[in-house]
Image 1 (cartoon, rainbow, N blue to C red):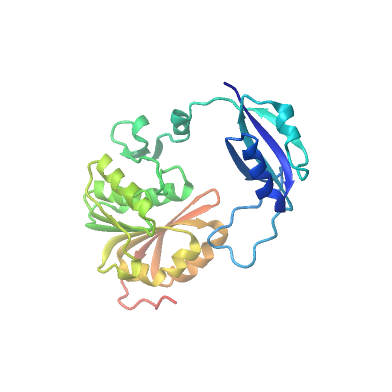
Image 2: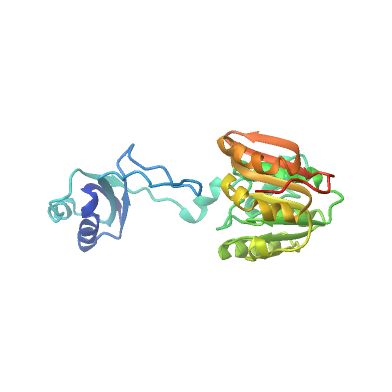
Length: 291
């Protein structure tokens, strides 16, 4: 049994018809993509306005088993341009995906690791649909800034908790830890990681504007525009410390403009294009209002 991939160029408007033809010729699957150098950049949450027009041509990849090249190529629609065949290399997909997840050392006392490759004492995070395995610069920055201030605190709130890694670090330090996220899949991932570490933490999809109380430490590993949008609630909920991460360096000013007048900036970390900020609530009982 041998598999090969057929790559064909087609006009954008012909993708549907050519895809159906490929399936009728025996393709096990068809994937739409772009020619080299024409892949549009991913649309980010902070992008506004009308996106640029997409390229006029697409590349379809179709997978065939035990290929008869001549029969398949003769059955292709007239819209098909360049045709290319490539062998499909068998891989152990069940295990191979794990190679990208290795232990991440945050400090002398903190390592985040997947359960299949964990040194003793590591905080275990099973990669899932919740963001936050410790590999991304924003998560590393948030972990590095929160860990030193945990001693002596009682509570922490993780807004946009993803995998739950930040809240679970708080729980491991003995804090009452609570994480919220808009994605139910992330909440399931966070609960699974709490069980994996035998830690007690609360996770649910409560909107941040419905969360009450004052939390010793509030965490927001979010993009800059979302931090600004949620700033009134983040300020309202912060008792002492606020850690903001997930901030691209060219958007740091958006976050600083909102939080600097309210909190005292205690530490700033830069990792490549990403910035993380740790703030402390000022002793002034009447800080300026957040816009």
